[in-house]
Image 1 (cartoon, rainbow over the protein chains, first blue to last red):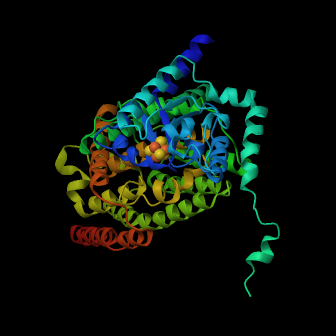
Image 2 (cartoon, protein in one colour):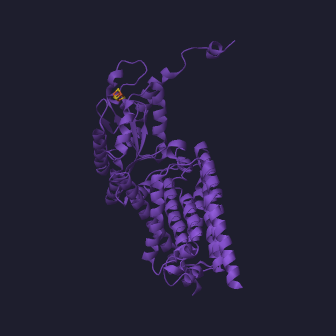
Image 3 (cartoon, chains in turn orange, red):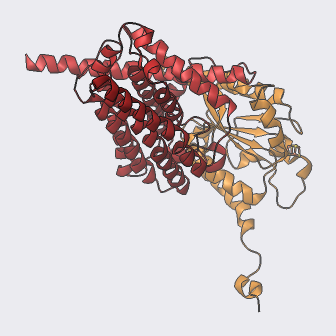
Length: 181
Length: 307
Ligand code: SF4
């Protein structure tokens, strides 16, 4: 049985499809990573269009609280072996938005992050380095963030609720205020 | 004895299916590599599609109801059935004297089955994608039908094996020489059948999030990939049988198929995507004109020869 798991892990590492959630500045480093200059397809990593098809969720940069909600939806729509890469210092400690009122500081309080890529912003070499590292981790059977999420769902959910509460409308009788005429 | 024969046919059928799948996946992988080289990239290894398929089948997946499951099966089964009528090299599993019509019919059924499945997911993107795929089908099936009509008139049979034997005896006997306009129309229609640029409106990834595949994940997407690969084998295979004189053995058959696919890839690499109504109206202009012209030529030739 363990041999079978090893084989499966090997192929999972050789073929990882990526969904990039480009909210932050980091999106601009992805086109050179995908195209002729750095060509990430040679590692079997291809951009995909929807969360259902993807294995990697790449969060490029800061997340406002409202976008965090969408990221969590996206993450939960992905299928079982799935990994998250936090890209840029904004996902690690808030980066230059560390004292902003509507930006989260640490991504792994809300969804399990397998690898962080430090830098503001990381170069394509750093992204490729992270992909290769992730491939090694997957093939060794170490990247188990998605299992952690299921096991510690209470903790993650509590953290998520704590910040998502702040996205509810501030005004009480909102229809009355926004009504024209 | 009947039982034994049936079992032999059954296992041969599975064998052909597996062979078609493996060839299709290999073609896909080589196609990705060629595309990468055209774009001056290194590209994935040519076995990448096998690894992708393995990974997809090992992933978890969600269903969107029984119509979704059934639709995928209904999309794949006709393809597999059509393979049984296709002369692959010298070998045909189920010889039938109307195999040409049978294959064309089953190929269309496959798309309708797929439409049922992906529409059951209820995602608006898949509805848009599927409507585009069907629009496109209306586009390329018309010139393709004109070509099939001329082949029928020319060979006076719908039995593919016989069409292949009529072309035996060297390059000058191939239908590509005898009906060059028809071949051209088919080649353009093939581009649409395989959904490569400029006719990839149905699965426009940046535009409608990969269209029909938007809700497919894990094993379902793997199934979609199997379907695409078998379809690739089938659609290039039928053109080889119709125009390139079939093949004396399996390897030459694959080589001829690959030549066709190579042309498709090259066109795919240099052209951008058309809008859907542009694509459909294009199919109804140039390829349809070529197809009808070919049919007229065949009719006139037949009339002259018969006199
Ligand atoms: S880490 Fe730097 S580059 Fe990345 S999103 Fe934050 S501020 Fe922008």
